[in-house]
Length: 366
Image (cartoon, rainbow, N blue to C red; front, side, top):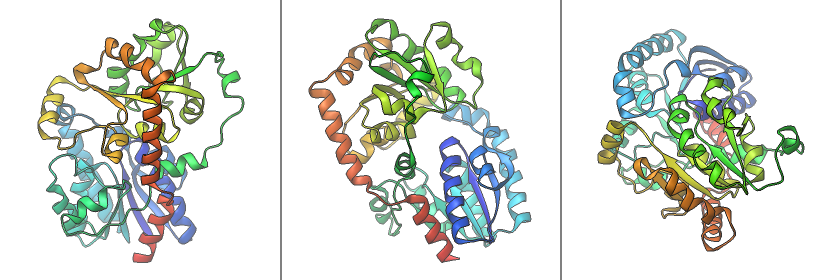
């Protein structure tokens, strides 16, 4: 069968590639085309567009990049009709993919949505739009089925693909030696996976390093970003490891993490963390008025309570990090409370294999 997939950022690219592998296991005649990145291409995707060409973040950034988004929307729509897939599989990336879902549904193409858009976070009535245009929705957060049930829509929880990735991980025994790490406790710095994130987050993280000479700070770098984005760190003698985030988390004592999928990854590695986020002033003011959830980190959202400290916008500064970091890096009540909260989150997530379960449901439906 023919599958058209669309993923719009790095984690979506990874999870979509795993789904493709599972679909291939069930469908020996599978043909894949769409928008994605290196992971999907390696899994067999014929790339119509690379997600990095379209990626935008923040309300203001999306506003100024609107023409580019429209250009790629039109490109994908034409390509979708030309390819004539048996199924369209959308992966996260709500703003873009919800428009494609409507277009595909209007052209009688079955729409399968893996990793639901975060409609529960803001403008919740978008759930009705999803319900109207999406044939099948597969959710990866344990609270999402209850949310969609309130819109009279029964959707399955298929498990979480982040847990699947971590379950496959085998630590590199030579990681510390090869990266010249010291014997000091390691604090992992995860500034994000996009250029705008790293530019906005890393400098403040680096500002606290000299305050804690008893720890070794190490940055989780992303190898597909421009190398000079980490120059400030290298000039300060702070190590960056590329494409070894799981190895870094495996040995870390604590972490400072930009909000996103990495917060859940860090929790699943049982590394106490501070979650941070900063956007442009206008984007923040817009977001503050429309977001309808009390937390930004996946950890706290799944737990439905504050497990990890969140420092957002103006609260994200060096003084706040200096105050909070010792509380989670040193043994004590706060660190113990975080680890206990992680155990509850992991129990809620469960042990379903998300890619395998979703591939089964999609293939059986076809």
